[in-house]
Length: 323
Figure 1 (spheres, rainbow, N blue to C red):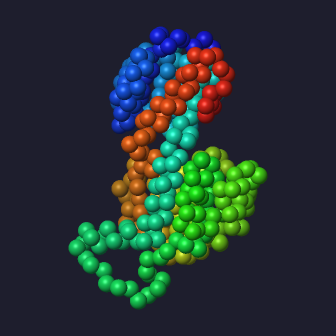
Figure 2: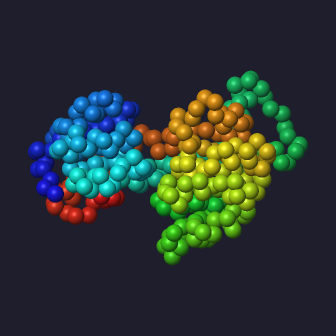
Figure 3: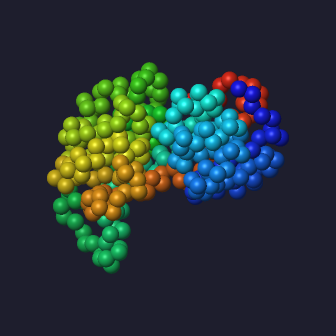
């Protein structure tokens, strides 16, 4: 692949909300760039682009419309929308945004854990109703403390490792699943292979999903896995909605077989108005916003500029390179 010189490159940023072009302009690189905010704009202007930075707006049928396109820097870590075979056939390189929001997503997961423990979702409901809750005699219904509790992290990657560090700072015991149990030994108190998940679920007070969506993880938290969890346990999902069998989760919550759930992602997004999840009191839902911080654009741009530098130096390996 012959990559164009810096002075010849045009970058297209494609995102409905993120201010990618504004933040890129602030770097003063002198590289031509523009941003589109709709799929229609993207379809019309992708012909101009040598480089595209995009996430969910990508469609593989755009490849024939993009004769100049040489490199895609994904804005997100998830790559479900890209056909690696089609990109490779067209000579288009692809790098993921893995790691750009690892700290943010881990902090969000910890926030959901704290919210569940301190029952902040119930407190907000009471505030809306102007209701001052009295003291609670029933121990099982009171707020709790994290010290001594066990967190099971499903997927000890960058997000999971950072979450483990935060959890241990709160005095929690951390168990984590990982494909390669020999690595990351210091991150958790116990690291077990992926296949041992069911065996360790009964120990967990919290189960946090930080794994990628793959054929192996789709539907991983199914009825069997939920049945293995303690009735006092909470499920936290900052991974992808399809990692969880949603009807099975709804049933477990409705039947009191799970204490609650903090969900940043759902099987269908936006979550349909008719979804029963909206009306379950012990569910706290955030709109797939775990990684959406004020620093997100700049974190992606750091990665983009790193990879552009490698391409201009004719280096084969890209940071987070996929194709």
